[in-house]
Length: 284
Image (cartoon, rainbow, N blue to C red):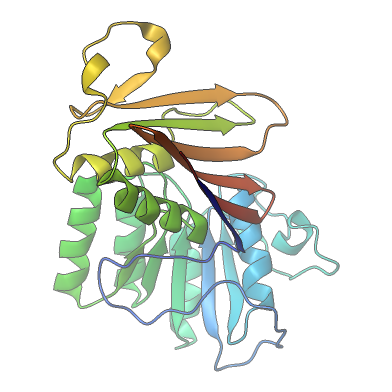
């Protein structure tokens, strides 16, 4: 018996720690800037993901890039940095307060999208809140203590802050599928690949392992205490192992393998450029 399911998605998923009105950062429509547009400040604009956000906002309905903040490429036009056809006439500035101050004087609705670092994100959100702006935060490996502190701070200030653990719809679906499958299998292993060396295990693998561990099950009982290094790293106390591959040119992927008597199931997320493909296969 074999079954296969394949779908394609574009990454636009967010999870909120406090209800706040936001709009998707990706759209196919074009619109000229107007006074009613939401002013978007990209903090971490020179990063790859920051540049992608700049391009997405310029194409989105009802939003416009109002500021680009980064410590790299200071003074350069963000439009040129993003390889856009025309300059946006918005220089990269290494001063978030200056950008926020100029927007607050215009009385326009503003939001700060933060792609910076776990060590600075709390202060960045405090600054944005001081100028009456909501924040959208995508900072990998942000600590739970920081998220809790942000939630408490924004609730006290009556402001919104959205923390996105991933920008990938596919990743969310993979996590949900893994949770559903875990109730039917006693063995699970996570295998991931990346084209360049990064911190491993990846945030996706850690999140999946944490989700499965929270279910209270014990996996891989027959070798849960093995000390063979080649068996991969064990996350938590539930026997979930992660194996990480680094091969130049290899598309990023995360695969969760489950097995039980007579059958094997694997759930896979492959990310290549901006395309995601989800695979679900069961063999018995």
